[in-house]
Amino acid sequence: MQRKMLWKTAWICALLAAILSSCGPATASNPPQAGQAGGPAAIRPAALAGGEKLRVVATTAILGDVVRNVGGDAIDLTVLIGPGQDPHAYEPTPRDVAAMEKAQVVFENGLGLEAGLDSTIRAAASHGQPVVEVSAGARILGNDTATPAAGAHDATGNPHVWFDPANVGVWLHNIETTLSALDPRNAAAYRANAASYALKLTDLDVYIQAQVAKIPVERRKLVTDHEALEYFAARYGFTIVGTVIPSYSTIAEPSAANMTDLINKIRAEKVPAVFVGTTANAKVAEVVAHETAAKVLPLYSESLGAPGSGADTYLGMMRTDIDRIEKGLS
Image (cartoon, rainbow, N blue to C red; front, side, top):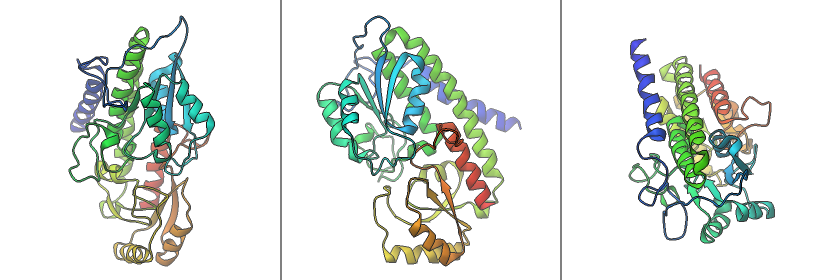
């Protein structure tokens, strides 16, 4: 029990240090990572009239929920890719273009997640709007070096960084420092909101650890529709047996050879469940499940759930997912 409390305290301190450390708000010598032409640049305060809210765009529903928790009532937030939509396959609408043209900052996950939005986001950056890659500074998995990325947009690797709550702590730092730089009059509120959310991330991590402990070690094996759970597996001690689509993106196509190999691995490892993202097509996974007697179980991997689903926030989504994983594998 004492060891668990020490571990939890250390985790809290690490997250709060990232948010409330001496690095402070963005300055010319210490900016958050931004996608502006020419590389990272200092973010200057936005020109806001009295009572005017900062106009903020977040690319995905998951990211938007975290931005909302930091910005609170001080920002006017637009989320481009809503609940139930797949960011890998999303194409921008005229509304999205208009929102980014009016935005005073655009937050993106980076690492190629929002591939369909890339040209629109880069156009916004070329016009001088800060475009902040919230995953910059996280430890990126799936690339050659697995080292912290100086800028997530320029990195290669798995974009599903949110499946490790510690990476969302990195998001908090990047979001808070950016909002504070753009809107200094509300900086104290942004810092307080980020610190409060960091504690919720710690509670989430403790909850996930407790649920994982219910799963026998020999059954901590994952098969998914695509390579979405690498960060989750690395943090919580799971083995990824295989994926229906050996790609970070849901829009890639499976091969017959990969399907045969996966079916053989599932049989050999006696994996009881195949987890499929709620935004993905489950038909191919169902074929694999039929051949192996595994169950097909849904996960919220790319997006939040609809209001009232219990997965309509990042924290709720992660709790829902670990509950389904625990039930499917125990």
